[in-house]
Image (cartoon, rainbow, N blue to C red; front, side, top):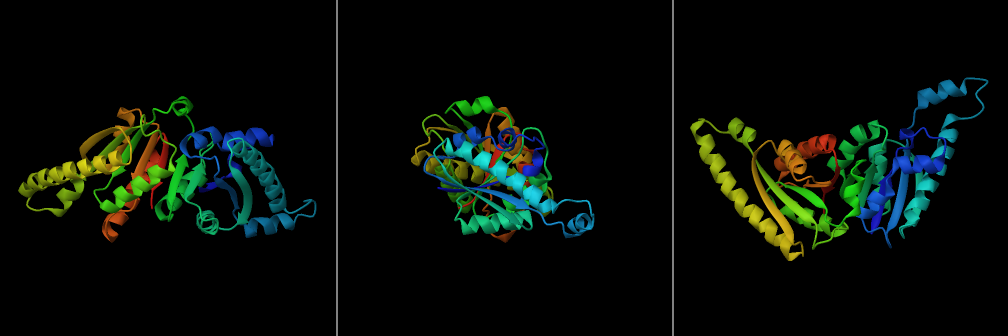
Length: 305
């Protein structure tokens, strides 16, 4: 498997590169989610260009050297430390440092390396603009699945009995992308608990249906369709070897219900399909993904095929 791990070295101010590496990427957690053995991992740091800032620095006679070189050398040392941590799990690793718009460069480097999964890691100790700004764009536009790694819940990753909340949108494309993404994850199909959820968006019904008397009838009809869809999803994933599957049909706002279910089930991972069916549904799923990604307290996978 080809994996791209994007790292924002600015999240850590630790002068010890080995300690900074551990702060920036919980490699043990990545190894618990993705099969690193025999995988090709590309570690990427995107250095944002700040031309006006650099020009000011260069104008200072007492400034010893270009700040960008200092940043790049530190980034290289940290990436090398992260590289060693990944190699402990059997991965073949290379490092890249590039300049440009982060989201665009992540996509470009991912394509160049034929990445099947993009991993964005958040430090244990810092809230980063990298995750709030860049991750939303990458999660929404990446052509491959994206794993947004959140700190915490380390104990849950020591067991194969992982609890996974899966958000479905009712389309076959979404179910297919979920299935292919689960194939990439290191899940024990006998023990992992999959909590499938489909949410009927009540606010969308109310906004599109008049008179109001039709709302209840339409919601009931959509709930019945949801039951059929969830049963189909259960069979699809059951045929793939997963033994522990629960079905959860909800009415409400999709992102809120997905997050609520993840809390109720004590899930340590959320997987949400982002394919959609048609341009409008794809647009809506993009917004739902953004809200789940920004609010989820646990690691999240945005699934694509």
